[in-house]
Length: 349
Image (cartoon, rainbow, N blue to C red; front, side, top):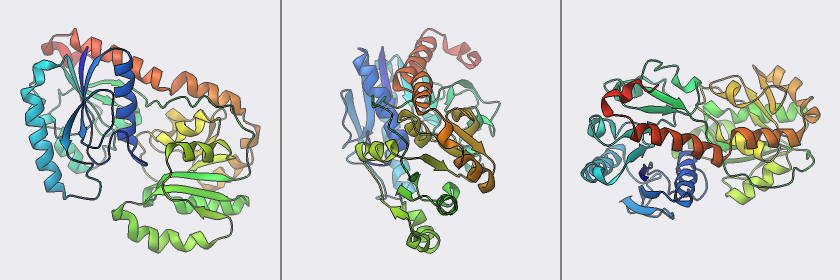
């Protein structure tokens, strides 16, 4: 098939360090190329891919441009892609709204995977005018604010199987991802201190969260046993996870997926996560970790994580959350779209 993948521009594809959506786009794109598909990747010019790179900007735009500038860049890119639409059998967007006004009536089959939360009124305003645009969710929970849109499928993310032997549990906990109020690194620190276990924090700090970090989190880093590592590359992150007792995921928001959870599973590491958003779909309670409602339940779960079978956790990852499974699911959906007349695509769900 001739497939266009359209990535966000915040990070390169793949990202150098943090960048969940861009990593998923990279995994999907490279696997499709390996399967023999003719793939074009629309992304930042500093991206690296075996597909044909169509640069929408000279470099990734992380922290560099205003929203108005980004909108202008995407507007030009969407117009260029629309002119080239007949070159593709399927166009797969990972943007969220820039594509809707341009491609709503496109004769080439299109779909958008929404990677973020949908519970903000501004997002409703962007999506609601296009109720028939084909969408893919990354968890069933993500759909809740827009249950009646044209959802084609829920396709869980997948990450590469590291192919590593499961290690014995170490004596430290991990908080991984991004420093922000909704991710609650403060609760991770509190839980680690109460459990009397060291905590290693590997996380990105966006400019919008710098004040929060300085005022709320940095003072907590002076606690004994708390180590802030900053952003890590893939190899370093995998090594960090592999030796951990557990990954802490004490979120305080409707997490649409939570890539760090399946990265932990890939290493055989259990996850202790708060029951919000996608968590009950991703964590099999009592098998790959524990789903808890508060810190008190989290502390009880930490007392039991040593009883979980780390080899089984990795086996469940290989059944549910690999790139191979994700690409198979998308491939089936592409074929379904390409073989279905545009007039009836709205009924695919």
